[in-house]
Amino acid sequence: MSDSGLPDYVLDADAVLKDTDIKWRNSQAPDYTKTRRVWAETKKSSHKAGSLPDLVEKLVKNWEIEASYKTSLQDWRTIDTSSYTFSVNGGAPQTGEHMLNVGTYNAIIEPNEYYCPFHSSFDASHQTFKHMMPSFAWEVLEVFSGPPQVTFRWRHWGTMKEDYVGINDKGEKVTIEAHGGPIDIEGLAVAIVNDKLQLKKVEVFFDPMTMFRQMAGDKSGVEKNLV
Image (cartoon, rainbow, N blue to C red; front, top):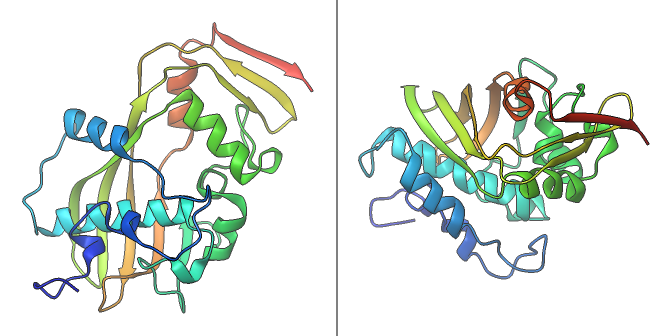
């Protein structure tokens, strides 16, 4: 706890990167330097330090680091491990262990004409999207209600710098030529937190096809091949 009585993961967006004696997915803490720079240079909102939107933004950023790179649920400091669940667009609640097994992208994206989580492992999914878009920044746009139920609007964005190559819901290989333009999606989230501001329940609402539509543009650069 800080002098303010608040946990470090709501005061420092990179707090959990400093954790020691834990198992990181790639044997070391990831480097978020480029992503944080993209965020600082292209964000739409600027929140006062210590304000509710600022605290929420930092909590979720630390949660994303843990969900993507910590291999043991017991090492996640941003969640209440006794009750944590995650769901997308009103779907069935997922456990933390599920996300650990399939990965953050596969836990969020439904099978579609461009991508299918059932044809991609945790590592493969991250390689697919991080190759295409090396930095995928995230911010809170608005917070509508405070703890214990926090409702907020968010934005996730980056630049399509490399070709996208994935497997779709029909088992076909899909290639989309890089257009060098922005990928910019928004959504809503409702989170229940405990008295330590740890996440107990997270519900996310957004259109995942927005990203793929922005990637494909007029579809002139989309190729599909059976594999």
